[in-house]
Length: 315
Image 1 (tube, one colour):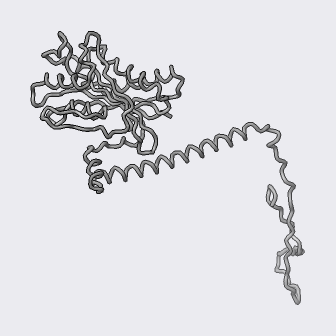
Image 2 (tube, rainbow, N blue to C red; image 1 turned 90 degrees about the horizontal axis):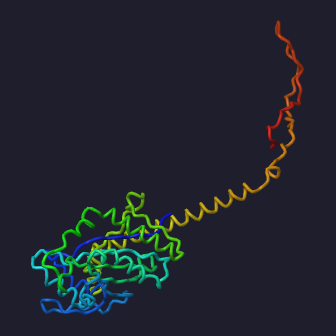
Image 3 (cartoon, rainbow, N blue to C red; image 1 turned 60 degrees about the horizontal axis):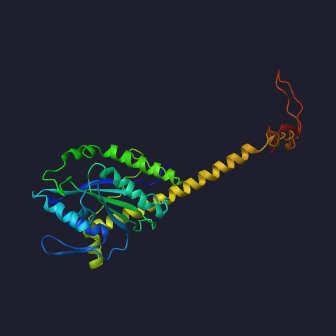
């Protein structure tokens, strides 16, 4: 049986109203002033464990500051439909102690920094739908290389070869990295990069837009999407409970079989019960006179006791 593994890829697009500056502040639970003068405040977040920037060799000092990094990265994009950043979300094994989360996040970030990207790393640990911790790491990667202590005038489109059409290959690499890291830390964990459909499991939970949750907090009324998500969570929880009970029964059955196999064969030998003969009493009505036999008929003396053998293995 494999453990939970999640790996999501995406980009921040202006055409969808997204902003790398606002996303950076949200990821690290901070407040920031946006280019239009408004303020985005996410200081009420309580699930942010750690936040830092991993930079490539030769990067300028200002690249280590999130505000300066993304302010300059956004300013370097001129198109109205520009892609401002690339985002990756990877689950952290629950069995991995929290003191190793930072080391794991740095190893994940290094995959991109050695190729010239600056990466904002954010470790979050909210409560999952099953009531248990849901540790994961967010990576926000720049889209341009550094040239003369500034962002290059041209996008590093050669980086696309690591992502476009390579989602399965990327997931496979991330799963292998997590498995290898956990082995070095003595943690029993196995991630399977295949999708739920390929593994014969239920499809993954659909992520609804955050405004549904904010609207519920503000009004106390659930949106249809939020109601559907909560109903699906109940069904998934019930399925998980039934699967857990099934695994327990399978373990008990395996233990019973192992106990039976350990008993010596001579102790299992059972002598066959003795053959039992039942006697059936048949009462015949009295006859005034015996009938005369027909011609050629042989008369057999009747008896009131008939021996009927019992069942082969006793009553």
